[in-house]
Image 1 (cartoon, one colour):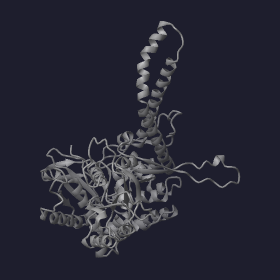
Image 2: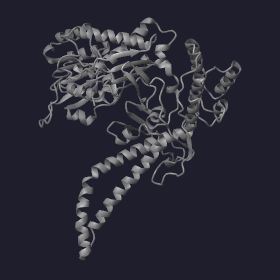
Image 3: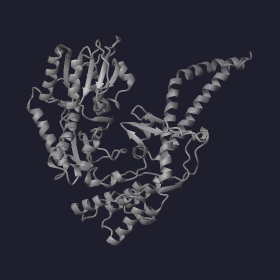
Image 4: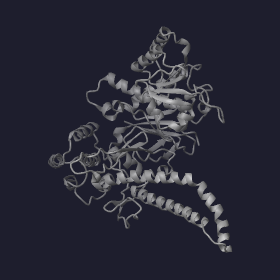
Amino acid sequence: MAVGIREKQTVALKRMLNFNLPPIKNSTGEPIWKVLIYDRFGQDIISPLLSVKELRDMGITLHLLLHSDRDPIPDVPAVYFVMPTEENIDRMCQDLRNQLYESYYLNFISAISRSKLEDIANAALGASAVTQVAKVFDQYLNFITLEDDMFVLCNQNKELISYRAINRPDITDTEMEAIMDTVVDSLFCFFVTLGAIPIIRCSRGTAAEMVAVKLDKKLRENLRDARNSLFTGDTLGAGQFSFQRPLLVLVDRNIDLATPLHHTWTYQALVHDVLDFHLNRVNLEESSGMENSPAGARPKKKNKKSYDLTPADKFWQKHKGSPFPEVAESVQQELESYRAQEDEVKRLKSIMGIEGEDEGAISMLSDNTAKLTSAVSSLPELLEKKRLIDLHTNVATAVLEHIKARKLDVYFEYEEKIMSKSTLDKSLLDMISDPDAGTPEDKMRLFLIYYINSVQAPSEADLEQYKKALTDAGCNLTPLKYIKQWKAFAKMASAPTSYGNTTAKPLGLFSRVMNTGSQFVMEGVKNLVLKQQLCQFINIHVCFGCTILKAHQGRHDLLFVSRVFPVQWGLDITIILFY
């Protein structure tokens, strides 16, 4: 299996932190201590890939934001990792003039222009710091890898390249060009890091085609100069010499607008939908502890806790695509397994402390000594297991609270029936009018899915009824106005593509409530089982043959890339859902 993009970007970052030299394996010597200076873009790229411990192992004693107040450390080298913006260049020039560090290793996230490079050179000359600027590199790492098979283009200012930004009616040509250039730069950086030149396919007449044309031009211009091409030479390894080129499929979001609005039922998707989840970190608010506050006292502020859901988390990797009730049961099973191991250690300890001189006791003692030794040696693993259980207990409990408060299981089941053209057991008007079912946003999402998937638009009289019900529920009707205009503009006369007969059938309420050791009380929440689903944009016919790929389960409202689907004829498929 080819090396994933997460590993390749991590290797590139470690090389950068080692002064752009390959890290020496099995080195027992002390690393060269240094300071890491990054901007918000650099921080977002590094944080999902490298922990503070890994940075410390690489010799990073301090990691500071470029625009923060920083004290001089004149005897330590500094590694910069920033975007080549005007503000960042000005601040770096100021650092040179102030002689903050012993030497400067300047690394830019994407390529720096010649004019900005000259500004740095002039500042270094003026500050007599030319010899201190040790290296200047373009790293081509302008994307954020969240998983082995997924990355996003940016986290900072992401609204500037969002679906809304591209589809604004008042957008100018200049603004559209700037958005396309931003997207293309990130995709170009992705393929430079991957060390592969893609075969590009796209839908015609959309923003996806604009991106494809610009990316194609940028790749060809780079390949034209063989001596300076980023896809040749020894710097990227042997990946670029492979005859197995990846297929890049650019798809416009408009072909499948219902999926991002859909209330989902899998663990990762629910965490992303209902919790504060960014860059693999989920932030939860703890209870304020009002019960202990004296009468008349000011309420305590809610404490916030952060948890990292990373590829190193085995439970997360195994269950992130599972239906939520299965996750709740798995947490309970893990807890029971942990308690069994804990009880075994306690039992062995009590046996080791037995008194008496009978032969049976002595024999039992000798038999269990080895078991106790093994149990003690596994304590670190046991503690890590306990930490993950606590983490997912807290996260799943927070998700469950949202499910029960907003009846998300009901919304999921109802939307599945709409999208698969099944018979509805309750009228849409009743769902919208129910004051106990969901937030105004939930109701609007439900109605938009109905409107998008309807073969024939509702009559004006029916639409007015729906509008009144939505308004009474506190909904903002602006999204409906846009969808009406979009549907009319697209002239969707033909029936929308079926989402398949994928209705998730409720199996009734949980037959059992979790044991007292578990914090989950799933009563009142339906145990809905997901069936295999094929999004309409995933069935791809390629000239080499036909292959069906699984949609990425989880975050469904981000620009993502999946590239872990090698097919039988050896072609990697890279799918980009373009917003």
